Length: 230
Length: 112
Image (cartoon, rainbow over all chains, first blue to last red; front, side, top):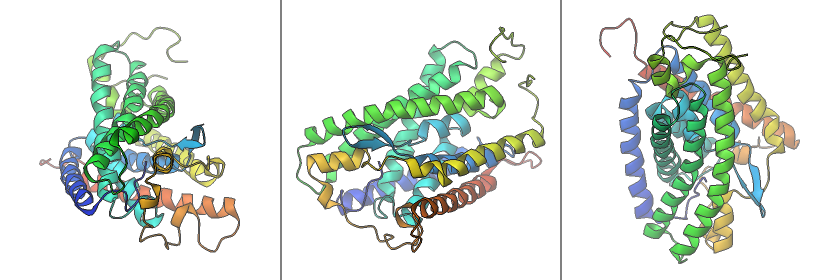
């Protein structure tokens, strides 16, 4: 979903640049409370992993493809504020070195995939965690639901920006239906990949999963049913 | 092997975990990326089908030696994409890891 230069007019791009700068500024503050000696290196590796997986476009039909946005993955593993920083670094590297996503659109892309993607994912993860049973196996499910909804949320946010400052004169409803339709399909891929990766990490190192912290703290003497861990 | 939740994990185990995680990222970027779908992504497809794709402008970084996930001058496509992917993974790792390392809470310092 990397927005190139030119889709949005200059005032809109400048406004999203300001939004992105404020958001990343808040994330720099918030991340201090999420990061310690153990999770800081993990955040670096998560960013590298998100970069790598974003190279893998998977087909979603009719000549369209999608790739992981990574907001839910990053938020679940390293926390929402650090997740925003992780996605921001990935977008920065992609725009500067790989010409993927425009330079004047960098604020737009950070707003859509960083702030909206991570923010929506984290809100859904927290809500799902509240509803689901209080056990570790709920964490990948919560992350997958967060992933599923974060992609159409980012697509909706793009449509709002397009309505405000899209250069082309296209009916907003047309863009909205197409954007949310396709990105709901891409969201399924996002959910599958996120669920699998979080499952793998929860199975090996649950102590490193940010979204699992309340569950681990709430169950100091966990009775493990047979078959949960092989 | 169960991990007591409250215990701080052994640095050795954590290091191995991070190296495996990074190794997976490198394999994805270096090798598996070659098999990625070449179709336009969701946004590009929608831009094309609804008619605003032509408002896109070429990025000012389009002449970057790594533009479009290839190494300029390397004809072999798997090699070109693989090297670009590995460089991207390592640059991202250093930038994000460096940033978060600077921001981390130091357990031995009184101030957060």
